[in-house]
Structure formats: structure tokens, C-alpha cells
Length: 286
Image (cartoon, rainbow, N blue to C red; front, top):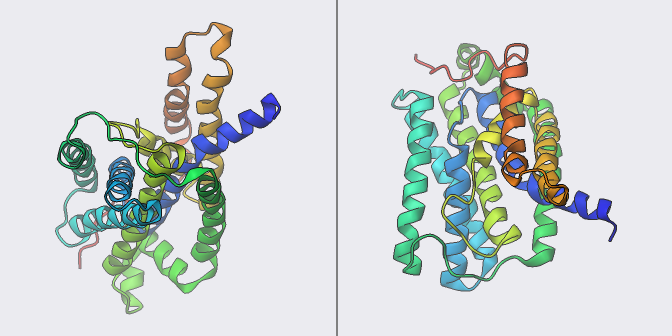
């Protein structure tokens, strides 16, 4: 394989978990829920996938369990935001901390060791390729669902004008709950890709801020599935670049920081010009 072909493969590997998480963020924010908890949903998906694969010897069951775990964490955010009126940033931050601490504790309970799990049965190269394809297919399907279906119309309206949704006989809180459930499932799938696709284990802090980079991709992509996917590919290319340029003598710390610097630049550079859904992060109170 040529060096360029290897670079493209590496871009896809690095971008795939970001795409899944960014799509989860798009769904939530289009419905009006500010999903700061993407990092926690990635973490829970990654750990649960490995733990179930370890316990059953079946990575497919691990994949399903990771997706379900991510969905439940997303639902927790939705319930906190819609039923109890908890500040969404506070709720998301709390979920992130709980997920990170819970996974660290889970390592000692399930694997009897801190820091990292044992190696488990992973999805393999074919499974990894399938998940990469699913990331792009999911972006297209989500775009069509948001802009071509009644569900998409209700979801987008809940993020723009929830009172109009209520006047049409639909409770926007329920729409937001379903959005957080789906968004959490997508982010959980991104976590499974990290632990059972790209690798075959879980280690502490293996998500390394990818949830926040995905959140930047949502904003950079202007809250659209295809735009967020393109932004995630850009961040994936920057992550891959550090491996390509590591022989140039550039400090490795600088190369590792590139995706995070780009995310920061994206947030500070376009946040003032790109318009978020009008009711994004605003609780709905009847």
C-alpha cells in the first residue's frame, strides 16, 4: 500500500469514532438538548463493549451492549434535562465524570486490575471496516431522516420552537428524550469502535477528549449530519497527520495537540457566526 493510501486508512480510523459521536451530538442539539456528555457516552460504550466481550467471548454482543449502554446514558441526560430541569451543561459534565470514574472502578471489578483491561475478542479488521462504512451510511440516513421525514421535522422544531410543537399536539419533551436516546446510542457505538474495532481492550481515558472534539465538529458542521461528518474527517486527518510527520523531528507533543488546537480554533472562529438551533440548551417548561 502506498504512503498516501496508508494515510487515508489512518484518517478513516481516527475519524470514525468522531463521526459517530458528532452524529449523536447533532441529533440531540437539533432537538434542543446541549449534549456535553458525548465524552461520557463514548467512555461507557467503550468499557461496556469490552466488559461484555470479555464475559461472553462474543464481540458482537459487546457491540450491542455498548450501544445500549450509550443509549441509556443519553436517556439519563434527557431525563435530567426534560423532567427535572437540570442545567444541561451541569448534567453533561456530571455524566462525564461519573462515566470516567465508573469505568475506572469497573476495571478493578471486572478485570481485577486498574488502568487497562485484558485483551478481549475484538471485531477484527472486517468488523472495523463495517463500522467505518456504517459511520458514513449513518450520516446520510440521519440527514435524510432529519430533513425528509415527519420525525425529523418534529425534532428540528423542538430545537427551534418547542411551543409550536406543543401546539401541534406533540410533547417536545418526549421528542427530546428520543433524541437523547438515539444520540447516546450513536456515541456509544463510537466508543465500541475505539475499544473493539480499533483496539481490543479498554484503558483509562482512552477517549482522550474525543467527545469534545466531536462537539466542536457539530458546531463546525453547522449542526447538520453531513457537515459534522466532514468536520470529523478534518479532525481525523489532523490526528493521522501526527503519525505521518513523526519522522520530521517536529515535537510529538505538538503533533498530538493538533486536533485539539483545531477544535479550539473552530469553536472560537465560527461560533459567533454559525447559528445554533434557537432553543438549543433551553429547557421547555409548560
